[in-house]
Length: 495
Image (cartoon, rainbow, N blue to C red; front, side, top):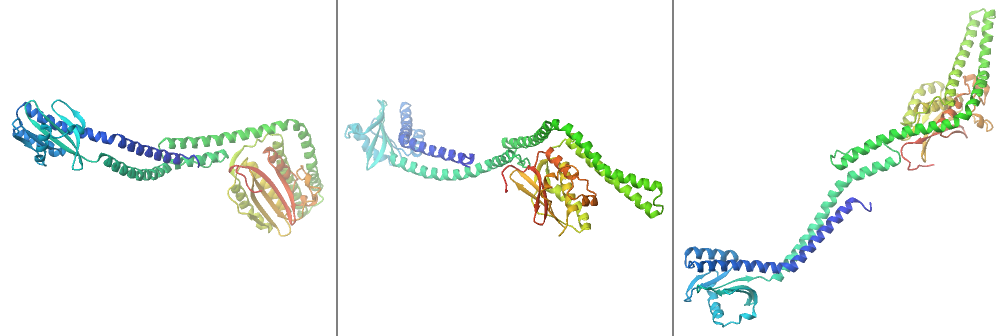
């Protein structure tokens, strides 16, 4: 990701570290030498104050003063020489104070030109300056108090510029290593922080494609965890809302078309019922009158007459039930309840229930392997469509006696196909297959008990769902199909 938070964290940290390193280098270069000199000046000045305090109290010869000044010299690397008004030695530091005696005489008597040295601080009783002797730099203080005490002290000055350079160089190397290590650490830490964010991004992308199965499963209690929980709630709420909207939209589309068709459907229904029931009613009446008139007195004839009457009444009942279902659909009284369900599981369950019948009829019933496809539709109506296709395939299956069911994703649709081996449908009959009571082979339809209403129910259901359906002749049989809206995302598919 070009603008990822992980990368921004790392860049911000590296820039911050680089800025700190540069700032430290600048401070070292500009102020380290001055700071070092000021600290040294303050240290040697404190030693001077100790000498002046001893001179004012006339206690410079005491053991307490000696010990106090020795501690200051040892702690701060100061060399000191102190003498009284009679030029008698009063204190000499143990780290080479004797060497300063002649230098003090030279300063007091004017043997040395001290004006060539850089003055750091000066008062009427002392002078602090920087001097160079033997190739080494020193910070010196000398003077004569009103009590007659003369003193000289110095402390070596290391090469400030060289020290500053070495310190800056060392800090630069340490800073670079620290920045690299810090960058790696912040990269790993940022990855840990952004990982759940990327998970939420993936979930949101699926939600864009109306796939609400993915849920945030993190256990964090921070802001990201709260966001994940809210996204789960949002996903559930959107799925419910979309389901309601699809149902409402589907019902609205049907209402628009329904108004102009109601009168025509009523007339057509009455005409079709009277036409379709005419034959079984005539048969029932004829055989019933035959029984009444005693045409067949033997038990075998009576059983035959009764069985015909029972069979015809069963067919009439089936016709009436299917017509009632079709009537409910066409009049819009049976509203499609749009929901998201697993179409693959539905088809597999129906086939499992029909395998016994297939074995009995010697039919090879197969289903091509496919993933779980989720669709938006009415689950009950979808099962009714598939059962009608399957029943039709059973009745017309011939030749190899094979039925093959396939589910295939085609862009944003899932197509369900039912193929059966047998004779093709005459091309002139295909446009009329979906009409009520239309039969391609009326003799054979009568033989297996078909009513010619099943495909009309398919048509009514698919139109109520606003989806496509159809039939195709194949080289060795016939294939019926229908399509439903895919609910597994809108990322496209093979055609």
